[in-house]
Amino acid sequence: MLLLFAALVTALLSVCRADEHEYRLYEDLMRFYNPLERPVENNSFPVKVTIGLVLQQIVDMDEKNQMIQINAWVKYTWHDYKLRWEPGEYGGVGDLRFPSGKIWHPDVLVYNSADSAFDSTYHCNHVVY
Image 1 (cartoon, helix red, strand yellow):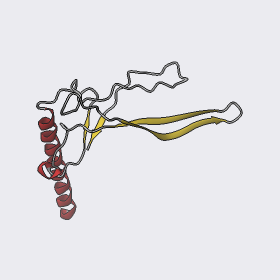
Image 2 (cartoon, rainbow, N blue to C red):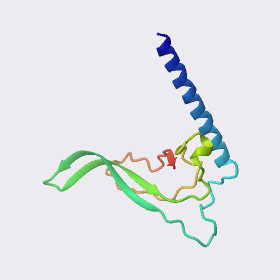
Image 3 (tube, rainbow, N blue to C red):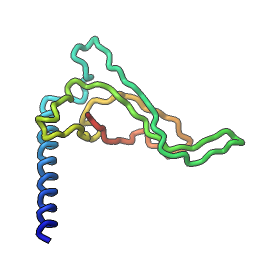
Image 4 (cartoon, helix red, strand yellow):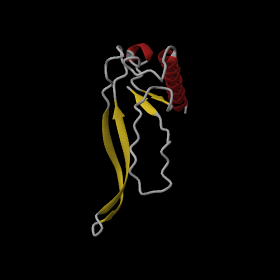
C-alpha cells in the first residue's frame, strides 16, 4: 500500500512539473508574439504552407452514383521561426497546443461539403513542435 502511494505521489509531481514547464514555455513564446504577423524574418519572404488530407473514416460509399462520404482532417504545415525552443530548457516539452487565433495560421478554407450545415468558421487547436 505504501509503495502504491509513493508511486502515485511521484506521478502527480511529474504531471505538476510538466504543467509548470508548459505554462512557462507558453508564456515565453507569447510574450512578444503577434498572430497577425506572417512568420517570416523578412517581409519579402514567402511562407511555404504544405496542405495534406488525413482520412479518418469512410462513412458511406455509393459505387453506382460514384459518391463517397468521408470524415477527414485537413493538415497544414509551415515553419514559424518565432515558435522555436530548446526542449531541455523546458523540462523536455517537445510540443505545445495553442487555441485557434493565438498563433498565425494560413487563411485557407477547404469547402467541399454536401452538408448544408457545414460550419466554415470551425476553430480548432494548433499543435506546435
